[in-house]
Length: 460
Image (cartoon, rainbow, N blue to C red):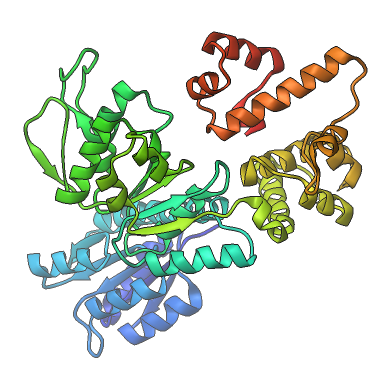
């Protein structure tokens, strides 16, 4: 399909010359004799690229350029001037023009600008589509009272630079809340840098957060920029912040107090402007009492505390979440559309959901993959979430909810697998911590994981 180009220039000879040149190059060409006419044409015709003269009666080119940003912020604009100077060129660039060329126009310059501009426009549109898909993927879904309260706190906190501490169980959606704070903040166009403090070995986390110089330690063969530097002018999300070592906590406190970082192996400090959002599934006040977390850092992080409610406290959101995860799965995997019956939704609402939203997402995907029917029923749900404890169950009721086992050994294996998955979820899939709590060697726990095929990406 031909590209559509718009030439805005008050000189008839220039408009006609540009029309002939660009049409000969294979494009559809529109022309406008004034800035006002050009703005109207952009709204009506949606061109792929604009050539814009600076000196025009009425609204001049720079004013038109400023207004174009509000109409279409990914539209490539080439500014043209017979009176080019550095000041005009800089102002055009500040307002969003990607190229500034002077009259008399060179055919090669014009066609080169067209090629570069159309490529830029395509990249901008693709980037917007990717950002939109990413936002959909990280969308906070639901309308329950508890969630509305959380989102109200997000809306109040987002426009400020205050640190936010998100508390809640594993899988309750703390990352989504953090992204919602960033998305609604004044830093939304800047980077959102995520760090899982529990997933990085203790001897590497300082390098990961603050960076290092070449030769700072064995294996540091290249200079590395830390996450705080990468997040400059944007937001850094410190997930599972309760797992930080005391030494790392002290350095993070310094960033919060002084707004500066120091790479490992360097004596030079680097100023950073970073909004910090932290999250944890631990009781930090208890961690403080046990001497494992700094009280001064806690007060710095928890200027605005937000509690992520567990899924069992927002069961009314389950239908919307199931619909969201289903649409997401169908689109990402190009699968046939499927739906859940009312009975299936009710069965999902009755499950315990110790793994919260992450567990629900895994179950929905498993049902969509394993079911051969277009409508997933309550029986399908029971087969997959049979290990889930009914809402009102006592111990005997929970045992009754387990799937039937042909032998005592099979029953023991099903029970042991379920118990291990629950313990791992409780400790955010930290193998060392789980092994310590259940009083078994870490090597033995690894063997059990392999024996039962337990994996975080499947069992969440």
